[in-house]
Amino acid sequence: MTIKDDFGKDFEIRNLTRFIDHIEKHHTTDGEGNGSIHTEDEFIFTITKEFYLKVLNLKS
View 1 (tube, rainbow, N blue to C red):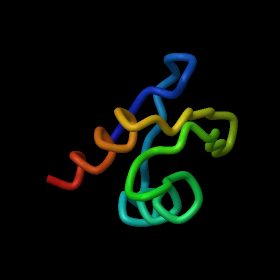
View 2: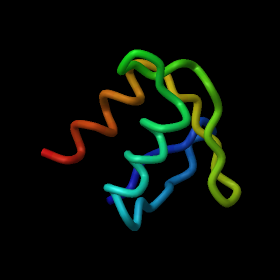
View 3: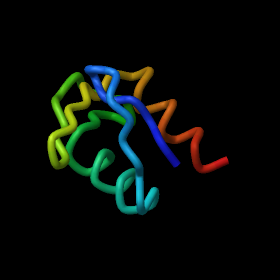
View 4: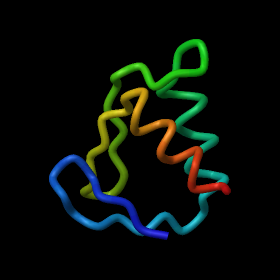
C-alpha cells in the first residue's frame, strides 16, 4: 500500500496497523489529526484531519 508524503514522494506502508497505531498515539487529539508532523525515514507527513481519515480508510 502506497501513499504520498507532503512532497509528493511515494511511501510504502509496510505495516498498516503499526502505522495507524503510531499516528493515533502520537499525532491525534480527540480522534482527529492534530496538524503535527510525522517523519519516517526521509518521508514527511502533516497529520491533518483529512490525512488521518484517508489513512483510516485504507483499512477498508
